View (cartoon, helix red, strand yellow):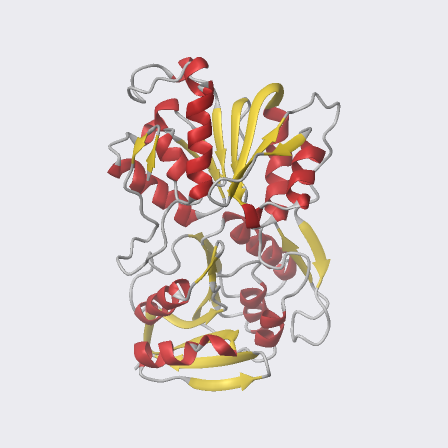
Length: 397
């Protein structure tokens, strides 16, 4: 990525030489060009010669929200930004890209969407997320630190910026307009107002699950902003819940890509003696899963334990220690359609499973997951299907 701030070699995380998707796009480049042309950060006290050349107090409080793979944070590292992200993978990509650029990671403050927000913001840069709910929630969280003289700039591809996006900025922060498009990207200019009250975030959202889905019928679920299908039970998970395998006492079960934790919680309630690990790369998702699990198992007589992990799938687990993996893999990475995440999840599951352990997958039938499972496991069994979804079972030999 070549910008006025410099030229950077950036990669996504985990780095995969077969992955043709870039770690930056035209929206990142547009925002960086605009900042350089406006000279805002230099005027505010930034030092382009190195992040260690002055104390943090000499720099404006720059916050980067939703940086997808660390492109913005890396290019702006001399200004000692604070990055706020919901993605563990984005956080790891940022660290790798900073190191590749020769930047001391101490120059950048890395926060998650679940951490307490900064107290002061002089410059707020927002990469518009796919989830409008996540944007709404995070703007509410950051709003108390935003002043009328705070520079607020958003950036996204044209197809990512909708009328609802602009209304969200305007409702929470102040008057908002967009720029002309460049290379199918736009900027969002927001002029914060001094509000007596900006309102409160409606997130997390709680609702009761429908009937007819087994042990979780009618039970409560908690969804933090940004979790997939946060306001209702998605039809793929609904189908999966009707066909889940029965765990046994003493087994270690993983809800891989757990989202709000419905699948793992269903296993925990059906078999009180099973140990359940909830894993997701989203901090919002794991927080949702923990709250969903705690609320539904409070007072229950459970001998098995529960763990909650934000990470790169099962990469941190020792090989051969898992009995059962349950997975509803995504097939998008931001706006790109790809099976790379599913393939990585299946590969991690095979490594983590003991011999005889099983991976159960639900997915759209057109995605062809059965072919990937056959290549990795040597087998794939169709457990259930309907016109849209399949449930597949693979056994580690």
